[in-house]
Length: 351
Image 1: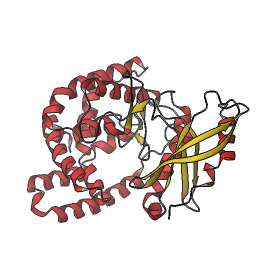
Image 2: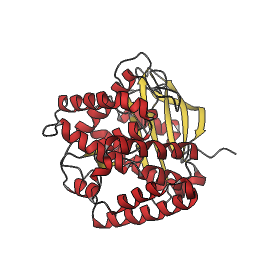
Image 3: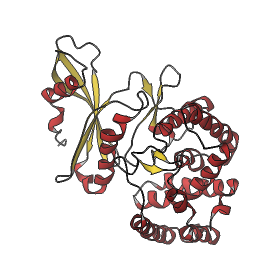
């Protein structure tokens, strides 16, 4: 039996939401029809067709509902709350045309129920490629430019850590290190000899390094980062151009902008492609940052942060393996990020 839909999908409620946003005027949603329903790792994504009574003008003909999978609620409650908070607090204060429009964002901690009602971009946008095929140079330029515009909008914003997001402190550092120890021990035991002595030594050195914490503690040149910024979390316009939309914000946080860039390139790309494209894309990203008002952050500072972010991406396969992401994902990430760390000279950044 299909899981029941939340009350938020009924026609009357959606009418109120669209009317509150000034989208449908005097028209009403007559009925809501499920067009598709698919599960993801933690959630359920449903495309809803909206039929109207009256002149609906530019009102959406369909929307996406993202909500909990009941059997995964406990596992995904934190990330769901994170994404609801993003659309409620961050998206509403972000530049237009970088994110899907959100019509409703609801989270109930008592019942662990949540949902998002999001703009359906199916007719105008598409994923850049079929995973795991990489996008073209031009597509990558549009993607990093969109990331730069979003990062610039929140660069050293006075609301960070006050009304938007949480800054790390001594307690959060200790929690992170405990998690690191537990997840590293599990993966090292799982891999055995497939994790070389050199790789084990690097993880042990990384665990004791304080440079990232010092960099974050400076509270300078920080922004809101996506946290899962692979290229398949971007919608590209079907007709080409730079109207990129960034989605899946359940791991957003305050951090180094280069964390998103290192995740996109150093984690996901094999050395030949990364060596061909990495430098020019970082140049382009920096140019767009400056064009969008970021000051006091020169090209060398971006390089330094990128090398540091790549080093700390070594933790990505630890977390992915612990959360039962398929080995075809985290094993390749593990191999590629070790190669990137060596290419970039990132080992030099450890204490």
